[in-house]
Length: 247
Image 1 (spheres, rainbow, N blue to C red):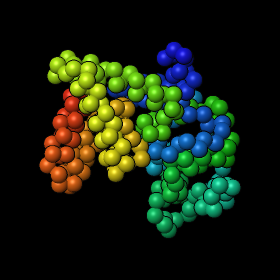
Image 2 (cartoon, rainbow, N blue to C red; image 1 turned 60 degrees about the vertical axis):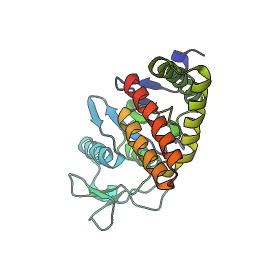
Image 3 (tube, helix red, strand yellow; image 1 turned 90 degrees about the vertical axis):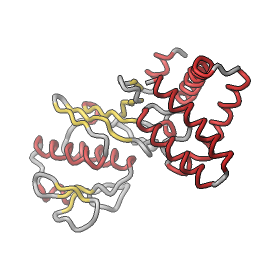
Image 4 (cartoon, rainbow, N blue to C red; image 1 turned 45 degrees about the horizontal axis):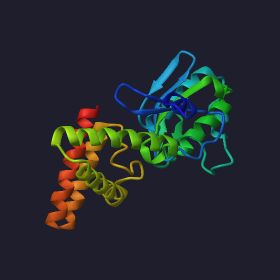
């Protein structure tokens, strides 16, 4: 399968910063949305861009209210079969409620999966065809399709090998050892910090990888074994230089 075919299969595009962006169908329920974040939502000429579900959903709902004759009373009665929580509240009586322009409050006490499901049900409520809306999301590597992970793992590993050989003059044997140890760091340290990223060679953002590099170094220091700490610092230095060159 070619790269274009693979990307087309999973509706993946790479933006100019290297981020992996996915078109998300709103016509079906998706169970694989954990750890995802929004990029944009579009309907006709309207477009909303945010990187937080809690920020983008109120903007979308305000917009949907502006298109509809639905009343506040009708909204307050809205329920769904996947949660007992109301979508809308009349007052700010609990945490994770976001104010709307009409005076109601939107329930934002949801995971990424249920934020999307909530959006789907609201589109139905406001009689907006789901198929006419475009939702773009970011999937971090831990929740990307396995074929995509395999593609970028192979690609990034080869680029990393070239980087180590060119910058440090390492032999193939030494590069193999570095990669093996970085894979160990991925398994050992990344689960301590997040469910979103699980492989140091599958990051798509230099800002995010730099954050995780610092966390790995701090975790190694807390283990209080000087030799391990120095090794981890060296491997993280390799990664930092590689991603800086890559992006």
